[in-house]
Image (cartoon, rainbow, N blue to C red):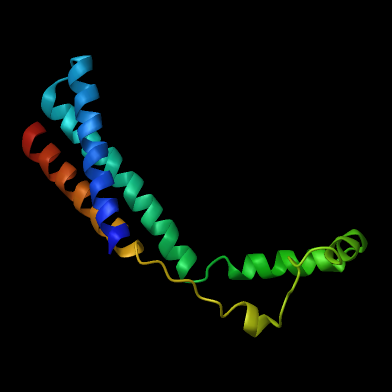
Length: 127
């Protein structure tokens, strides 16, 4: 819960900082608000999307195949004696590992809301 609140707080701080910078530069006020909303929303949406893809196990197959490839070379066999990176299990054990992140949903929600708000405001103000 503490991480989720800090994500909302961080979004607010980013918005306030971008507004203060845009006001200091003398940009038009509503355009700077729209720009800061859109950029902040995209950043949150990209990080949330990456965590969602990572959490669903999209990269597990790639990591498994890279471990197998490293173990199949002569140099990789020698190096794998000294580290525990290549503790590869069977494919069904290795690929079924699912990681869960609590902040994924809040990042996606914040990013989506900021994008929708910025698109709606830009449509209303500039059409």
